[in-house]
Image (cartoon, rainbow, N blue to C red):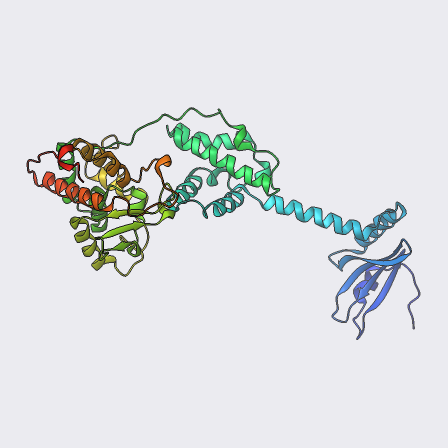
Length: 414
């Protein structure tokens, strides 16, 4: 017997059993409950808008109660009376909510890592690692989980005060610049409207310029070399320090040295070709290897030749070399891993080696002198001669021999 149309009751809804085909239980005013063959019961609203019959789903019973379904029906009927299509409004509200959720999910860390990932295509490996580790240390723990749209200058400044209060003004300055870049990216991608990082310009104490500590007198260098020789830590760390002394490359380049970059059988002599992506200036750099460096590398190959990196399965830690220097008794004001460069530059200039050779070996080529096609082997024979003389000089100092400085006129043809 067909059901006589009347308002539904909760008892009637609960007792409705599924059939082989879906059927409807009307509540009136366009609201009905569709009972599905699977047993599910869905609230629906039938209405006409601009002459077309349409339907709107309110949800499943009992998640949506009879009372709630009727309230939603009444709201939808009111919209129709006002000339608004409730179905279209529901779609628009869902889009707005989705956008709001997307914005809420765009935390500072999410946006920062996305920005960082885009930049790694043009940055050197070392530069990219330096930036992400800086943010991981100081920014992400304090503001990383907060939606970027909710961050104002006070919150960012509070995070920047941490390194500043540790007298790390340069780090704080770089972090502010990182924030400015992240917010600029967020604005460009529609996830922020204001660059909070830029708002903080001038809010931090100025960073004091400080030269990296280095030992540059022959007596001090001799003591340093003997300390390295007597180092009882990891043999790979000891080898890295020796190679830094012989090659005076940047510590980051040394820490990330790979076996694929080494050619001990090159026609021009043993070489270490550092890829452009690892170099500060973004140009490939070739380091002629002295006999002592070759001997060290051959020994290392027996230990780590099966790995990608020369010193381990992964690059040496960022603080490992400096920590080793501290354990050898040298303070942070006396020597650091970067100091081998100043040490070599000072003593090689004192010995009379031409500046252009030293600067090329340090990869300090002036921009206005760089050719459009950079010559990877520029001055290679002369630099090889200088590097071997430098290694022999260091070995003589370490052995305690009296070393006679080489004067410029003696190497004019170098």
